[in-house]
Every structure is written in structure tokens, then in C-alpha cells.
Image (tube, rainbow, N blue to C red; front, side, top):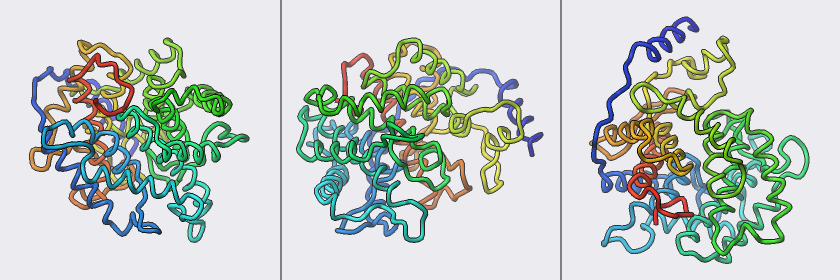
Length: 385
């Protein structure tokens, strides 16, 4: 198996010439329709249903949807948030208001330590979603302030995760695994950084921010590329990294680009530990033994190009242009999505759960392509204003 992976890697890395930069148009309406339909399904899905008539927020479908949907809402026919976007915001506000009475996403019954992990995860996601919503309206709401209070109360003050939050772990990369607490801490930094009314300067949170900064910076070199992508994104919203550290991550992202101009999720999800059997297996085989594809995907490419843009990589950078070209020419004409699949298990790409990675891929592709259109705008919110 390792030999097969090695041959595949060499074939992809050495035999193909860089893809030319091609101009292409992407279908905003189709992307919005896909994202809305997927979020609507998620909110009605029994698997997402929680107590008090609420639903949980996912890192693959709901969070990217909220972060991206606003950039597609600038048509004359749309005033304010889309209907599904509004429902998510109302759902999050309700769970924040009922924080002391509502149940966690997962309980310890049937799982191990999931109550605490659920609370930590949700506290960050709630704060980020509401902060992003407020940033577009340039005013911090009471619900968002309450969400931040909940978040800071659960920040770890001792141990390996000092400065971070307990995070849901289901052995599912890239966002529910043993290293995902780092991703969660980066999201918390983004939430603070984009919050309006100079929230990041609030005196009461400065000790919390010090702990958060120390955690993110001290553990950054040990992270996977995708975790470092979120660190770089966070550093564009909140002071975290010096220019040299930012450049190191930018170079790392650019070095992961494939010959076709895109990026591959498996190659950014795990740390490469040299030419070992473990590294080869992770790069080329899922945990269920099925082979991973070697081609680029929409999730890795959308996220990489968006983060590079937010980090200030010039629009005329050839590698960035090739990444945007890949996105512009790889939207699914049938449903408006971008392709991506699980690196954990093989799932049917036509099933509801099999589309989870495509949900995230479509959202990040929308962010990247919209950011390219408005390159140079002095924006603080993740969403295009």
C-alpha cells in the first residue's frame, strides 16, 4: 500500500506540467441555491435536532454557510439575511439565551466526555456566528456579548489546552479530531477580531486574550497546514503573528499547491512526518482502507485561496491566480457546488451525509471568489460587505 501511495505521489508531483491560468465565470445563483438547500436540509434533519426546538451547528455545513451566505445576498431581490441564514441566527440566539437550561450538543450518555466538549465547542461557534452577524451591522448585540461571556467562562486555564477550549472529538478530520482544539481556538480569535465596537479592547477580556495568544503562537509549528491556515486567517483579524510568521504560513500553503492549480484536502489535514509508512497511509488511504483521490478538491482550494487573499497575497500572484482559476472552472454545473469528499471514510457523494465536505467546499469557494472580486477592500467581517 505504501508503495502504491509513493508511486501515485511521484506521478502527481513530477509528471504533470502546471495547469494554465484560465478565465472562467462562476454561477452565484446556483451556489446560493445549493447552500440554501443544504442548510435547509440540515435544520430539518433529525440528526441535527436538539432540545427546546433547536438544532446543532456543524463545522462542515452550518458554520461555513453562515460565514459565506452574506456575500451572495447583495442582489436587489434580497434584503438582509437569507431566510435560512436568519433561522440559524435565531437558533443560536435562542441557545445563548437558554444557555443554563438547554442541553449540550452531545451528553456523556453513550459517549466519553462529550458534555464538556460540546459546551466548549458550541460556546466558540455561537460567539463566532453572532460576532460575524454583528460585524456586518457594526454594532455588538446583547446576545453576542452573552455568547462571549459563555465562551470565556469555558476557556481552559490549566493543562495542555491552557488558553483554548475543550473540543468535540469523534476521530473525524479535519474538525472533530484530537488536534481540533487548535482550530477551535483560532475560530475564537476570529470571533474576537471581527466583533464590532472595539470588543477586542475590552479591559475584562485582556487576560483571556493573553492566554489565547500564548496558546495559538506556542503550538503553531506543531499543527497541520489546515490548522495553520485558520491561524493565519485569525491573525488578519486579531494581532497574533509577526510578519515573518505570517510569511512562513503563506509559503507553506503555496508549497502545498498541486500541478492543476488547486489544493488537496488530505495533504493539508495531517502533518507530514517524513517518508514513513504512517505518513504515506494518511496521505493516500482513508481509515477504512479505501484509497484517497490524488486530485485537487474544492474545500482545500477554496480555503487556501481565501486565506491567502485575506492575508494580503497580491491579486497578481501567479499561484493565487491559478487557484482562483481552478475554482472558477470546477463548479458543478448540475447543482452549483464544488467537489470535496471525506478523508476519513468513503461515502456516496450523492447521499446527504456524503455531501458534508462539498458543503464546506462550496462556502469557502464562494468566499474566495467573492474576495477576489473585491480585493483591496478594507473589510473586517469574514463576509463581503
